[in-house]
Length: 219
Image 1 (tube, one colour):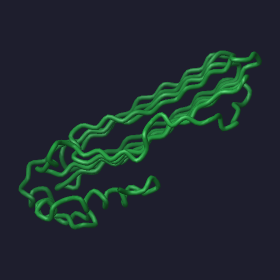
Image 2: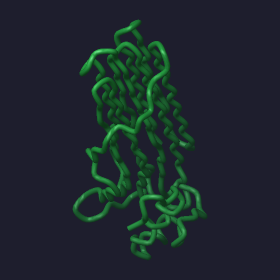
Image 3: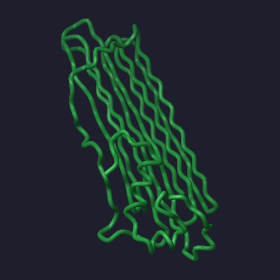
């Protein structure tokens, strides 16, 4: 099992070390995960893997801040496809009256057509008498081996369980109500591919701020 701090290359190499030699030969890969033949040479019809990653953050109070960032990149290597992505959403709020600040954040991942999925998700949240803060992060690697599937269906490695709750981090929003979100998507493949994003950012003065973002990639 790769560590929680492993980069995507290390996670992909971990996946390829789990594969039988005959599967590696069929897709034209070695234990390091490098690809050295094209899809036509493999003689295996192409398959599709789709990953949607995103999240939302909302904060209510006199002063609020919500931010979100999502990125998602897919590559079709002929014998196999890899999608790597992550999402981070944060919210903070402050109010003059006790109990008047509320903050929440969440992230999600949906993958279809992958044989191996490594995901790392962690959430933080807490509140004080006049403030509240929350954050949620998720990162993943999804790999589909063309023409082969592991016994028992897709294999999912979870590095962290969601819902890890800790106290507020002490970061307070600036004066006012702010919302900002960015979502990016890239798909690279010789066959059909898909890349799409959607975002929403909304604020109401002295009341709340909200952001949502989704990135979808198919290769």
